[in-house]
Amino acid sequence: MSFCAECGARLASPLAAPYRPFEESETSSIGVESLPPRDLGQLLSETARVYRENFWLFAGIAVVPEVFFLLATLAPLPASVLFIIIGVVASIFAAAASAYAVRQRYLGRDIDPAASYSRALSRAVPLIVALIILSAVLILCALLSLILIGIPLFFFFLVSWFFVDQVIMLENTEAGDAFRRSRALVQGSWWRVFGIGLVYLVILMALLFIGLIPIGLFSQVGPSVGEAVSTIWSTLLAPILHIGATLVYFDLRVRKEQFNLSQMAAETAA
Image (cartoon, rainbow, N blue to C red; front, side, top):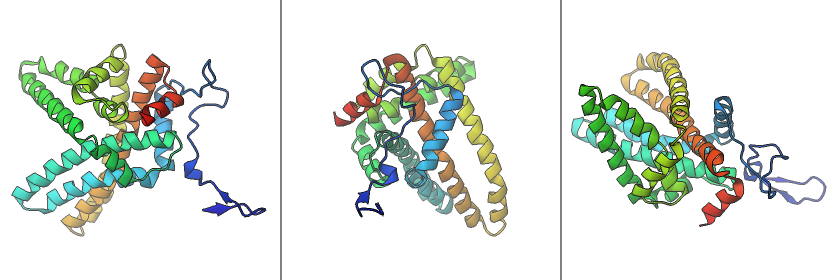
């Protein structure tokens, strides 16, 4: 909290200031602040900026599923399987909570991990239904990969339905409609979305590889110490994908629907 040196009035918190991911002169034809279409470099830069300026928010969201994965490595086999399942489900909620947090920060609204998860839990049914459907389809495609046709189908559905969580969270739709909506957004941009996703994946893999060095060193102290360091590193990396996916989702809407902050605010109110 800060105060004016002259009059003593309370000053607004810097975190409450809305994001300005555009120049002041960039407004729509009706004077509404617009979101610009971004190329790959700009998406990566914006992902880094959003994460950097809200580090504790997104790290706080990302740590929840990682805790369950850590418990899975320390627990005996039956409990380990249970913790892994809980961790996978928690990962979906973490992605959904992060999407909601990105939107709230773009609108200049204060948000914390607990409130983000509360909103994600309110959408629990469609999120879990979507997870079951997507998992079943991708597993089927993986099995079909034995006859080759499953490989292209796997990537086709993975990319086409990549924004299901964002649609469920930010457009308040049910699972079935979210799959159709995600497919419609990606249509005509499949290769671009695939390429962007591939770049994000390569960056994450490179960072994971770098993390193997400290993880290996701490593992010499004890396996549990190494697992703890691995959990911390995974927590730090997960928001990159969560934030990046939401920004690409925004970018698709900007390009196809002239999406802007006023529309974003209206959808939030709805």
